[in-house]
Length: 450
Image 1: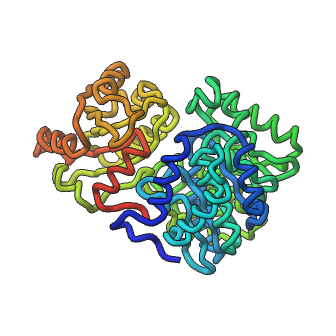
Image 2 (image 1 turned 60 degrees about the vertical axis):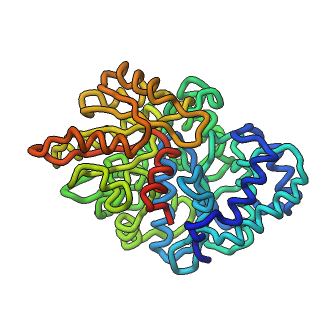
Image 3 (image 1 turned 180 degrees about the vertical axis):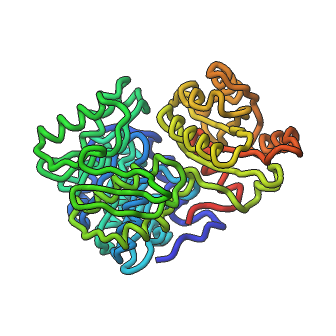
């Protein structure tokens, strides 16, 4: 399969536009509609290769990327489902190729699946997310592969992906406050929702957890369901030592290259992926782990822009990073990564941030107090849920930062360029706060994921 042509609106995108006109946007957490639809389609979710099912507030996309890299390093073909996408709907479906790297779903294949699903649904009440999830199962069932890595969309217990009844392994990554209107206003409530992907007697891998309350809920659920469980920090671990990633579990120890994905938080993500692939029943060699650490890709997550249309707007020599992290937990992780960059190579840090109104901007901004020189707050194109840049700038001010609203990212980069001191090191610029903003930036820069 070949990736879609990015230069024109695709056939599948037109099909999705039709669906968006017919069905509500957003989430309606229930398994009844998706179960009904899948039954009409012949229950493709029961015809998948071994599934690694991934939930969590933060890190689930990264661990998904590590799982894919690890399996592909061993010559396995891997289907991968992620959400949301950054630029094109096709990013949600990466189709495995035997002996090679997976590719984004072919446009004609995707469009055909959507039409068949819409016909099967016959206009009944459903959300577009549920239709897109049905497409995951239909595509992955109809195209053979050795494994499927499927990321939860929202929560776990009532997420549309949770019709998977016999995962090879369930993975729960770090849990923090996010989507509180849907999942609850305490980490233990959110943990209970995420734990809903655990299935009786099936293996569970629990990634690094900042909150003991969340960890307690996850462990209690796994014990109640009698799931073989591996817990970060108890059964497996990873840390940096002499420029190497040292991974250890009950099977042994490996000295690996540091992950290609920047930030110390990726050590735990890599470790969870290694342990998850082992728990799923795949043979994992040290050579596979080494290759995965250096080949892993995850666009829009601490991704550095080294070329593209936006770079001329920034000061010469500036570092430009994009990251879609959008909650307080993600803010802490990203701020730590920026602080580590600062230790190695000091540069003034500027933020360009856009967020939607379901997030906690003050919680996100607090992590950067004392680290960022200034925040430029921008709108998110085409979003009814965006936080007005003036309101967002006030939130940054309340978190202890100097902030100013801007009309768009280009204007913000021009403003940084205008105040950058020629005698100082070129600045470090972080653009983020929302995956939607990052998607716009990658599209405008001419560097969409492929």
